[in-house]
Length: 348
Image (cartoon, rainbow, N blue to C red; front, side, top):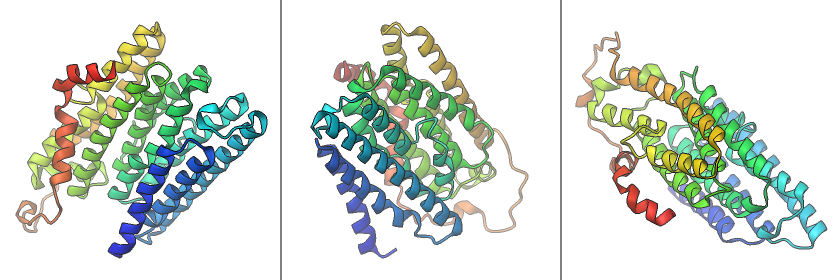
C-alpha cells in the first residue's frame, strides 16, 4: 500500500477514536465510530484476496448495522427526553438498544459470531488493530453509559462472552480464530465488573492490549497462522518460541505472569460484591480458555514435528522485521505482576 494512503488511513483511525473519546453528544460519538469503520475497511481489503474481501464485507455490514442501531436509539432517547447527551440516556428501550449495538461492535456474546470469521480473513497486523484499537471507542461509550444500563444485561453479556469465548476456542486449529475467541472471553471479563468498578475494566483492557499485541506480533514474526506451523517454530527461533508460550499462558491468566493480575482483581471485586456464584462461573470459564492456551503451548514446546528440512536451516536467514514493538509488548505481557501493589493503589 502507498505509504501516504497508509498514513491517511491510520490517522483517520486515530481521529475516529479520539472523536468518540472526546464527545459528549451522541451524534459526534456516532460520527467517530463511522470514521473508525471506514478507515479500517481499506486496510482489511488491501491484499485483494477473496477471503479478505469477504471478511471486509462482513465487517462493514455488521458495523453499519450497529451504527444504525446507535443512531436510532439516540434519536429515540432525544425524542423522549429532549437531550442528546451521552450521560443523559434514560429511556430503557434506548439504553438496551445502545448496549446491544455496542456489544455487536466489540463482539460480545451472543453477538460474537462475526468476530472469528472476520479475523480469520485478515493478515495478522490488521487483525491486531481489529482486536485492540477498534475496541477502544465502543468500550469508552459502554463505560460512559454503564450506570444507566440494566445490571442484569451487563452480567448476562459478561457471563455469556466468557463462556462462549472459552467454549468456541476449544476445537480450533487456526490461530487467528483462537485469538478471536480469546478476545471475546476477555471482553466478558471487562463487562462483568464494569457496573461495580469501572477502573478494573480499564485495567483489564490495558493488560489485554499488551498481551494480545505480544501474541499477534510474535505470530507475525514467525509467520504462523496454524497450530501445525507453530509446532516447528522451535527450530527457527527457540527464544521467540519460549516467550510466545509464556505470552499465551499470560493470556490464560496464570501467575506469575501479567494476565493473572486483572483476573485476580475482578474475582476479588465480585467476591466483595457478594456474588460468589458469578465469580465461580467466571473462574470455571477461565479454565476453558486456559485449556486451549495450554494446547498451543504443548504444540509449541513439548512436541517435535516429524518434518525434515532439506533447505538451508531457517535460523541462518537474516530477520528483516523490526522487533522493538514485539520486545516491549512481550515484557509488558510477562513481567507486570510485581507492580500489583502500585496498580492496586491507583485503581482503589
